[in-house]
Image (cartoon, rainbow, N blue to C red; front, side, top):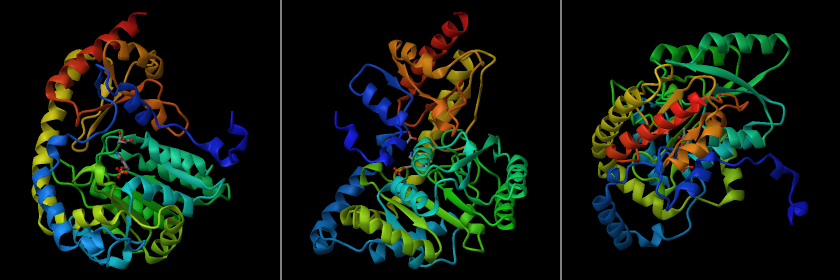
Length: 401
Ligand code: PMP
Ligand code: G9A
């Protein structure tokens, strides 16, 4: 009824299937392999209780007060230390910007960087909530397929060369190099270096989303691309959602001071600053080693759950399906026989009591109709087996229609 009053910009907003499915499955007897919720067992609740109590006793005057837009100074100092664990050195608190989750960081970054018609590069598939932000900027999307080592860099170089020979300029690539959401892939060190070389040669920015950089449970986590950046070309985003708790809604950006300045102006318009109390809690959690000490437990739990999910998929999925074998993160991505449209199949899966995220919304062009994303971090091991069993049955029935 009131749509006629809405701005033109609203017509570019797209719904998040992840958020829709959260609503749809809430309170229903459905095993959800859809949303990427952390396992609450990983929340260090006793330590947080103590931290909150100490903060409200000792620093209530600052923790309950307004604070600066870029983030609380001492917290930014701790973020310099935390970033070092991802190999990022040679930065100071002036390169750090605190946000309401890394989602806000992505929102602000794409708004300050992307104009309509700009050439942007994304992985296919990639994180849908980042795509939805970018869609509001109406860029020209260039999708690069993801293989076992992350984005196919030969394809990337070819695409970039084509654009350049057409007289176009690439603005940026958005990449999730470690335990990618949704594909579960990780770029090795050589590929990270090569990506930077390409970005440098053709002079575009790299927006590196490191949401799962601390969550590699098999082998070592390669350093962040930002750790290799000597030109200030990489803009890095991190989040506390997977290493502490998503309820604090805390993320951060590591970037050149030029970018930080622009973020500051932008955030003044959005929400003035990130909640002070959340920042104090995370700061103390870093200072007391709560996060660092909890990471082995998180990795162990997710590794066990990944194993359970992969074994169940092996047993219950049709033999001509293929799926990723992630070394970290929270998701397995599956490619089903071409005949299957996972968006259409979702209703049948829900009737059988299992949910997943259809893969097409992770593609800029909504292709990937036969793909799906499966979360293993939240369900119990029993639910993982039962959920995959139900899903396997749904797929096999669909193949026989
Ligand atoms: N980037 C990626 C790749 C994600 O998977 C997520 C959330 N799962 C986010 C960003 C945003 O997370 P948050 O806003 O909770 O930091
Ligand atoms: O499912 C994900 O990728 C992360 C969670 C996002 C959300 O809760 O919207």
